[in-house]
Image 1 (cartoon, rainbow, N blue to C red):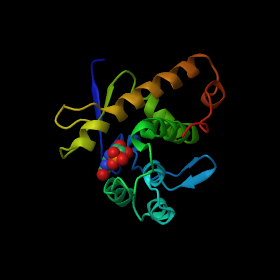
Image 2 (spheres, helix red, strand yellow):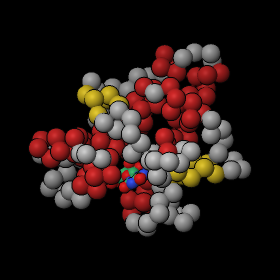
Image 3 (spheres, rainbow, N blue to C red):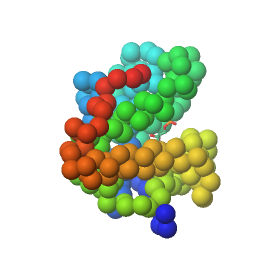
Image 4 (tube, rainbow, N blue to C red):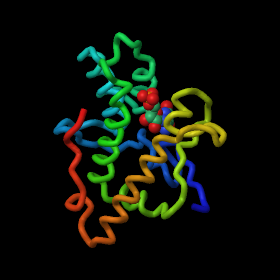
Length: 170
Ligand SMILES: Nc1c(N[C@@H]2O[C@H](COP(=O)(O)O)[C@@H](O)[C@H]2O)[nH]c(=O)[nH]c1=O
C-alpha cells in the first residue's frame, strides 16, 4: 500500500463521497435517511423526539454535532457495543445503493484510506486520524468494503447479488 488518500470535507474534495456527511440519501431497514451520518446519529438517541430531530437535521454536520453531544442517559443502551456494527451496515447500504460511490471507492485501488480530521479529539482519533495518529476505524471499514466489492467484481457478479444484504443486525 504505497499511497494514502485523505478525506474529510464532505464537499469540494475529490473523495468527498467517502465522507459519511456526503449529501446522499440512504435507506436502512426500510427507513430513508438524508445521509449516512443522519442514519448513524439518529440511531444513537433514546428519546423518539431527539431521534426525529437527528434524522431531520438541516445538515449532516448538525446531526453529527448534536448526536455527539448526547448524554449517556440520552443514548440508547448498549450503544458502545453496537455502533461499529451499525456503521458497517450503514456503509454497506450507502455503497450498495449508489453505484457512483461504489465506483469512487473502487477507484482508490490499494491506497490507504484515512478520515483525516482537522481537529484533535477522541472521536477524530477513533473514526480517523489526527496528524497521522488514530485508529482510523472508518478508513479501515471502507478498505474492507472496497475489498469485498473488488472481489465481487472479479467474480463477475453484481455486488448486490454476491454480497449479503444489509438489513439484519442492531
Ligand atoms: N467527516 C466529518 C466527520 N466525521 C464523522 O463524524 C462522525 C462522528 O461520529 P460519533 O463518533 O458518533 O460522534 C463519524 O461518522 C465520522 O466519520 N465529522 C464532522 O463533524 N465533519 C466531517 O466532515
